[in-house]
Length: 274
Image (cartoon, rainbow, N blue to C red):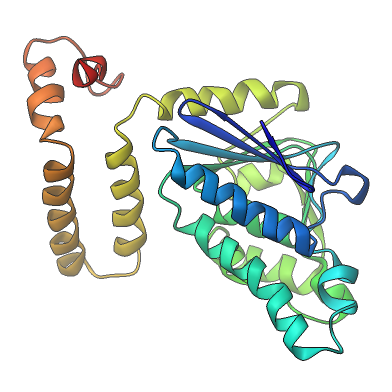
């Protein structure tokens, strides 16, 4: 466990967990937290074992979003300080969106502004049914920025996204699942178990395949079919080269022997290690 001023980082083999740790402030993201998360991401990237990164919060909140006083009010009269303060945040938001390992938001409570953003940036998300999501920026005279509108627009349908951006209303964890903003909503007491079930499915996969699958998805959702096919074929060759043709030499050889069924589970990667 690496304990920094505003977060805790726990790395256990293929799984890393980042705990936002300002429970007295509903885990609001202040400048120190932005620095701490960047450091945590550095630590995770340096560990070749990590396949999955879980983000969650201490206490009863995931994150109340940006610390309005420390990030906006106090530095506002110094333009360069204001710029530098928030640039650190914008960098780690972009890092999470394109991170090599699979990212999972474990939304344990309040998720406002930057909390909505972090949930939307993660590849997967599980939430407590009673968690509250909200974009309250409109209530203090601005629109969701720093990627929050992007994350909302990319995870909700147009009218749903605009409704919450324009009204500032909240939606529950149950609604988040209905809207497709998260993968699953469960009772609070089942959140740990539900998250671990997803993690367990991921840590048995080839880490190179996980990373390239994410890259292909992000590229192909923005391009037409011919360009998408060209891109995924190039990435398939890259995958084969980087993994020693594992999908052929190990996975399909096991399938040929009927040692596993691809529609039901992952091939045995122990053979790769041996």
